[in-house]
Amino acid sequence: MKSVLRGALLGAVVGLALGAGPALADTVKVGVIAPFSGPFATVGKTFKEAIEVYQAQNGKTVGGHTVQFVYKDLDQANPAQSKALAQELVVKEKVGYLAGFFFTPDALAVAPLIDEANIPAVIFNAATSAITEKSPLYVRTSFTLWQATVPLAEHVYKTGVRKVVTAVSDYGPGIDGETAFKTTFEKAGGQVVDSIRMPLKSADFAPFMQRIKDSGAEAVYAFLPAGPTTLGFAKAFNDNGLREKGIKFVGPGDITQEPDLLALGDAALGITTTFHYSAAHDSAMNKAFIAKHKELFGSSDTVTFTSAGAYDGTHLIYKMVEATDGKRDGAKAVEAVKNLAWESPRGPLKLDPASRHVTQNMYLRVVEKVDGQLVNKEIETFPNQPDYGFKGK
Ligand code: PHB
Image 1 (tube, rainbow, N blue to C red):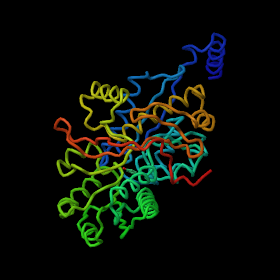
Image 2 (cartoon, protein in one colour; image 1 turned 60 degrees about the vertical axis):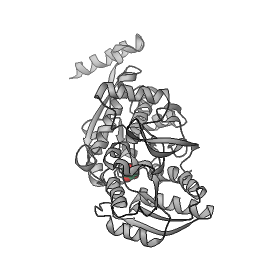
Image 3 (tube, protein in one colour; image 1 turned 45 degrees about the vertical axis):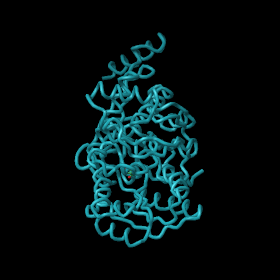
């Protein structure tokens, strides 16, 4: 054993003496926690595919270190299970990074663990502003509800709407969305006539539709986690005659995410959202991303905002592995990227050093049919939006 160790050390010293070369090559593991089964299984798939697109375009190594992704399935918001999976990844798999996290409670649950292990957690989605305040080792490449909702509320007011009802899932991001909408819309001069909070696991939306009708609002602002939840809500909106009644349906782009547009069908036409990523974003980099996705997986129909979060999160992981020369030093890794600016398939991105969350364009989009396919067409840009909800320093 001792001689093996001595041999390894000697190898390393020789490697150093020869300069960085194959002798120093090693593997840095990244543990990705996300839904790969159950109602939100598409999310894990979008994360994994986006990581694979990034690696196909940029190689599997950076600075001589191979970056290997290890996936763990967490099918629903379950903070205790998220913590247990993270522990397993750190202790057994010896990952140098954690990543993924679709639901806010799952991201929040790993704060003490990443602090203790001194490893960064790269949030590909979870969108409650307060998350990054809980540990200096969180970095986030998705969006926040505050970031998407402030420009949306201002836009809705400008269209002449004065009375809005908010309807949100009753947990972190929903409450952020509700607060952001009310604060911004009422500051502009509008009125939020009712604020509906729906249990995260609601499946029957008919009673909420009645309450929306009864509120007398001209528009409903809605946030639910993208997937069967948003789909169920949007279908109920149509089936209960709210669309027919002329009530406008607005929200962050979770409500019209690309994988659900087909199921929503023409009833989605005209829904107005603000969001950070549309698969229809018109840029060379997005076209290259979509083309590589098609080449690798045969279709790009499921490419959506969670794809963009994972793609850019992988970019940050590569930058951190490079800056720390593959060593496990979370504080140094985050320090190295916390001012980073880069080009993404969604447009220009910059990490804000205080919140460690991306400052980015928000786009006003409307669901339209282009060449027979429903897309989120970007019609206006709100440039360089910060996380308006960040309360830290
Ligand atoms: C969250 O839990 O933070 C979350 C989940 C799904 C979304 C957005 C945010 O679509």
